[in-house]
Image 1 (cartoon, rainbow, N blue to C red):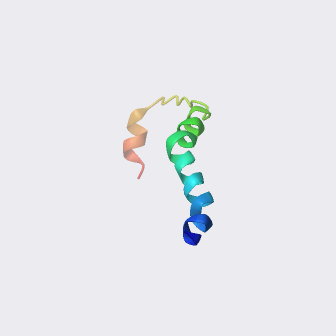
Image 2 (image 1 turned 45 degrees about the horizontal axis):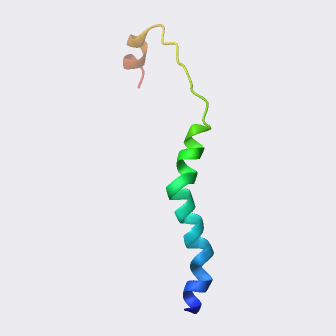
Image 3 (image 1 turned 120 degrees about the vertical axis):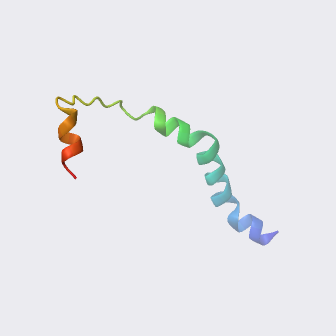
Length: 46
């Protein structure tokens, strides 16, 4: 029981992150656009 009490905040935090936090974080990322003028240059450069 003592171990559960000690680890509960960590487990609860992880559960929140997995169930809600990750999706919320991804929603806050601004979309990015790329303008590729010459796609061939991407293939030629390693």
